[in-house]
Image (cartoon, rainbow, N blue to C red):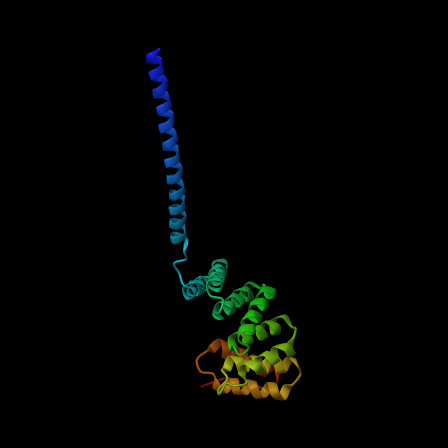
Amino acid sequence: MEKNEQIDVSNKEVKYSLNILRIILFIFCISLAGCASLHGSIFMKDPLSAEEHNNLGVIYEREGKYNLAIREYKRAIHSDTTLITPLVNLGNVYFRKGEYTEAEKYYKKALKKDETNLEAANNLASLYIETGVDYETGLQLMIRATNNLEEIPPYALDTLGVLYLNLGSKVEAEKFLIEACSGIKSNDILKQEIRSHLLELGINKRCEQ
């Protein structure tokens, strides 16, 4: 019986040791999980800045990879909510895709942050021209964005001219389109657009420099 009792004692000691081991392993696993969580948070942190996401989006957009561009612009916005450029860029991509409602939404978000942002105002006004709606709204956006500019870029002058043309204000349309035509330098595509708008007014003028 003594032998059997020794066996019993040995079994109890083994069970006790196993319980201690389980506790140690449990604590180790908890600490390991914490380390893993910390490890994960470190490695899951976005290595790119908001500006870098935006620039990557520009590259994708130039390559015609619009969905990837959209992803990067949205990441830029999420990373820094103060930035306006990725909002405008998102609007531009959706405009290119023909998703006008989404384009309008992001242009408006950009203008809400800065109503004088000329690119957002110009592109939203161009969207209204493209869709044949809200010319007056587009005009007000453009006036607000260009009001304090010493010099209005030719592309914006062209947009103003087309808005006035569509609103039936031919005198104002001619004034802005002639100014756009006179101020343009090397953009042949814009030159042709301005000339076509002038032809709608019955003015046959080439934009030469």
